[in-house]
Amino acid sequence: MTKSEIHLELLLSKPVLDSTGKAVGRIEEVPAEQQGGEWIVKEYLIGYAAVLERLSAWTIGLKILHLLRA
View (cartoon, helix red, strand yellow):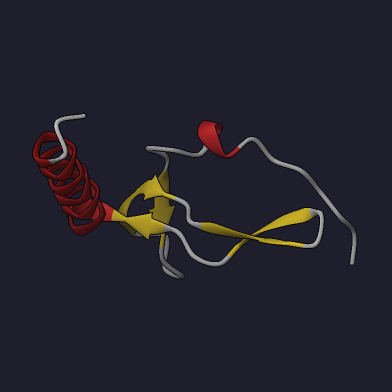
């Protein structure tokens, strides 16, 4: 297996196609885990549900910061 590096920011908002070539959504987020000295992509989130997940996390985070008066 060869190692390769990619710039994930270049993949954000790019369309994802299913096996028939039909667009199923756009890449909204790419969670990864560090293993040793490497980052491993475990999944990528696509479509409207991923956008809502990101926005809800942001909203909750802002509310917590507001409560802490940060």
